[in-house]
Image 1 (cartoon, helix red, strand yellow):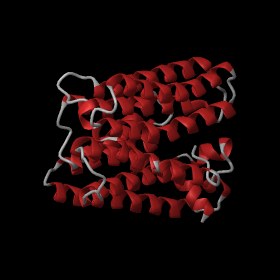
Image 2 (cartoon, helix red, strand yellow; image 1 turned 60 degrees about the vertical axis):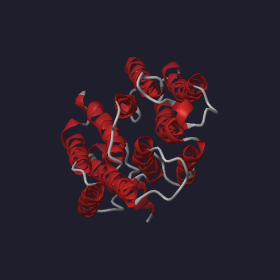
Image 3 (tube, one colour; image 1 turned 120 degrees about the vertical axis):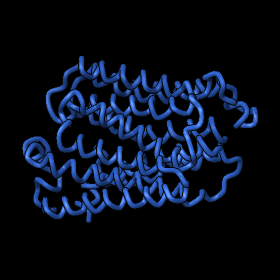
Image 4 (cartoon, helix red, strand yellow; image 1 turned 180 degrees about the vertical axis):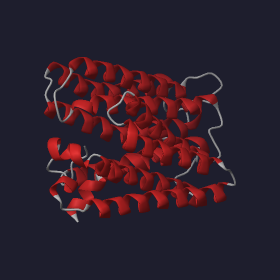
Length: 307
């Protein structure tokens, strides 16, 4: 069971749940903390299933490389058979598409199905063809952006230009993480790390535009006037500085261990960033609800490596 949990990188599933949940909340902007409608949970389940499928099939495609660079992984060790892992990955992917289809029906919109199909295609292209190429980080960023869009589509959005900035920005952030993680098991190239950090910073800057783009009601309206745009941006900058500061340490001391720590921190921080974006749309109670997903990540990280 531990081997299967490691194959699924269980801590990271919390980040996959946070994206569509936050996307749904940003569009629907609920004023009270009530149980979300079924369309929201179907979107969350679809993204988590597709994310898990991508992780499993990623290891299936990488088994020969992992035998050299990560022999402790479940497939190189032979704890889980390649055929069994392939069947599990395909089943998880099919489940994700079915859940997205149900969300499409409940939302009375074709877009959840369109987004889930795009997400599944991007996952397959990354795992099978694009990993290790310059296109790889682009596809991985597209997957993270599509996770946000699936939650938004289940709520009938995106409905404003400002809402589009979030999946675009978070997608760029994920692309930067992917590029940064390229050297976590081998020779570390500081210039690649610097370029990846700049992409992460660019993505975080674009996502922050959600709160000040003209034509948006702004967080002062949604948070009841208790938080100004300036104070929200300060909170966003503090989280971004924590993530990027840890990433810079690996540039100063370019070792695989430093890179792995920075990657794990950047992935974990997706939950915090999603919570702060939800804060801008629907107030602090929903932000705290998303932030609680960190408990899942931190509890499982003691047992299962997130990278």
